[in-house]
Image (cartoon, rainbow, N blue to C red):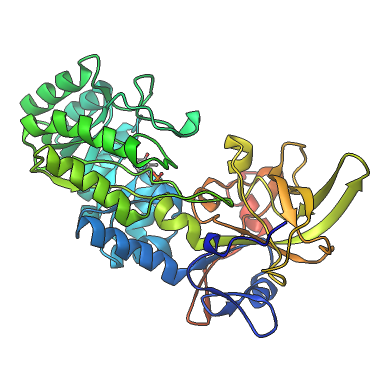
Length: 426
Ligand SMILES: *Cc1c(COP(=O)(O)O)cnc(C)c1O
């Protein structure tokens, strides 16, 4: 069977003279030797290039990076320096973004159940917009205004447009049956707009929708843009936010629209319907996913004749829960043999104490794979590190940004002492 498709690797990858994969001019073997495995290796120029593509497609101050995809201070700063605003979905994400020197005025706050404390934090800090998700949240904002918490926040209402995106049920958010937003179909959206317009505790500046994540079909976006445009045009508010959700190719044969194509679909739909608001978007996955790969070390290979082969690596569901959560597929290959045929089919698993700890159900790998080999899993830059855990008290892996031959540690590996940092013991 075939080698890994090179287009699944980040932009600045190559094979060095010694046959070893390089990312941003850094040998993956050197990065692994220096920082250990597992390690998240980001191609920094790839991240920057996707940010620039998005700003090129939508315009400055119209691209809001969804930090939940991947957030550390280096990433917050990179996105901000490339001209993106930041979408944060908790007080913690806001704190990390601001700790990187990103002003609150460049951050928008999301969440279907924001606490009073998070709303107070956001208002006091002066976030750009609060994306209001429910009537209860409007109540909380009234209460905060009555308390004298200010300045009066600019708010955008999250609308559930009743559009079903073709994606996994857990990451589809635009259908009527959703915990998110004000439903358009049952009249809640109109009620929320009326209430926010009359309110003195908030300043209504726009409407928002986000139909889901890892969406491949331009037609789903066009449909949502059309529904939202029809709702938004008569309101004549300054902002229309169309969310994120652009899918990326994870495995052989998948093909997603580019950010530029996505921009064309959304902006054409808005133009056609006479939208005069500023149209902005909130990409996460399409900025970060393909920029990184996880490098593991193979530790155990177990062949059960007539059943299957298990290849175990030194990470697993704690650094990438997506296969377990959504049954997501990933490719894998050996950085020492990037273009080698992969004739072995094996189940690629982690080191956690449960059988569900799978990274790839049907991994294709070279037949000469051996204990001690480095193994690379591409397209792990979004919803991997950010969804990671300490299950089994595994210390979370480091994050390294590689560019121009320089490997920069931006998140260090956790230590055993980090595991005790919050543990109170007499
Ligand atoms: C998760 C999320 C995004 C980003 O989605 P991607 O699929 O990563 O692009 C954008 N907006 C909202 C409101 C989200 O919840």
